[in-house]
Length: 141
Image 1 (cartoon, helix red, strand yellow):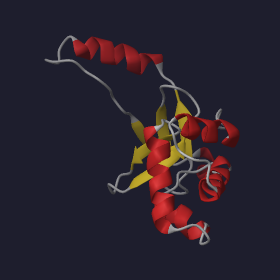
Image 2 (image 1 turned 180 degrees about the vertical axis):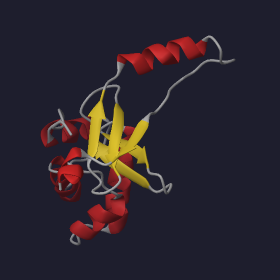
Image 3 (image 1 turned 90 degrees about the vertical axis):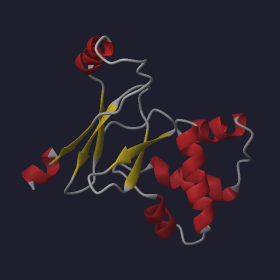
Image 4 (image 1 turned 30 degrees about the vertical axis):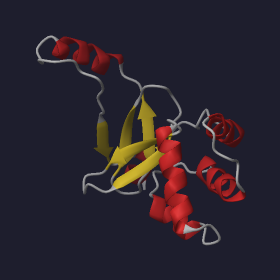
């Protein structure tokens, strides 16, 4: 996974620009997330930060999702996981063994979407592609 382009300072500025205060619990959550290289759940973050209230963790993850700072990943079992976003429009690879999340851009997917838009009645307003993989690290194990 590439390193997130958004730093904790930038993330907090995004929240402040949306009218949210830069509270100590939010700063603590953002600091932890900045170092994450694999996908995470709000529950995992809550468990890693027992000093921060569970509801605060869940609300903060939702704020970050709504602000476009984190991406929601739909796992094979239907459970949501999240990752910090590093590029504007991108797609994900998710290792089913270790949970590592990768991001990539693919022009051919965008070309396919344009071609499909001619065959799909209505207007396509978005799409999401997630590839579930055994990552190279796990394969080299």
